[in-house]
Length: 124
Image (cartoon, rainbow, N blue to C red; front, side):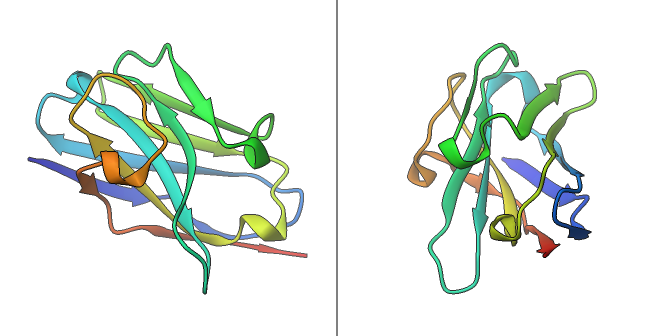
């Protein structure tokens, strides 16, 4: 079992920054990969970024490359999503998710455990 709790969302102006955090508990943290997904109103949940068990392998969706950075601290059981140069189209509920594998994945169906989500709103 893995429990995930996101935090750090909020309201920010376009061009601003936010850092999302995902606190994990339960299974040994360094044994699984983590992904960030988001869901905007009326849209399907979409992949944002993923990081492998060690933090040395990451992958991003094209729309956030160069603006978002995913990282993890295995000593603290934390994953972060640093979001810079935010745009109104980044507005969504952001979720972190855990898959019971060491390697990354882009498909939400590969993730077993999900947090409750944190709202990010970017005003123009």
